[in-house]
Length: 183
Image 1 (spheres, rainbow, N blue to C red):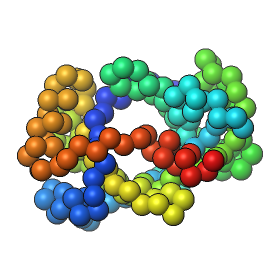
Image 2 (image 1 turned 45 degrees about the horizontal axis):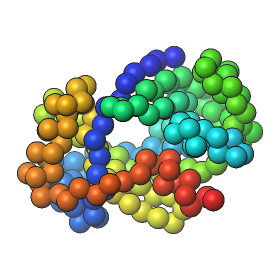
Image 3 (image 1 turned 180 degrees about the vertical axis):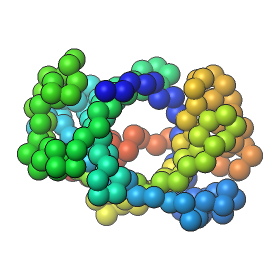
Image 4 (image 1 turned 90 degrees about the vertical axis):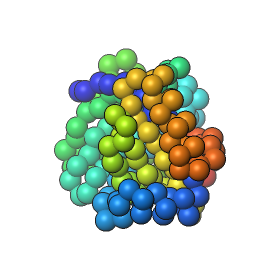
């Protein structure tokens, strides 16, 4: 298992701004698809606690289960790599969280998937991500900026918004957006 603290800043953007940023950073040919398969209890106890549990799939054979919990200046993440057969079984039949994360004891089942067409590039000491998300017949776009230092990252993200004439649009987490169309 690997653990890390994810510090990111993000905003929703329009399709037009997404296309403009792809061209500006010359990233049109670097987009890759990853599928986020989200899990929760039948009564959505994890979501109510602002905990995200997902299996992320890249290609046909790369899977990892991730547990994410929010903090004031980032998200604590724990990851466990999975074998493809194991991941497919978990998606089909659910699983006990305790088998992977010792501090969490629930039986969870698959709830919804979100297809994320993502591209990334180094930017000002961090990583810039451009995402096109598709879920439940909805397509939306966002830009994320991931950094190691919260305060420095916040300044750089605000400057990025100004430099690229982006109006800040508060956006929910991907899991929340996908769950909203399931209820």
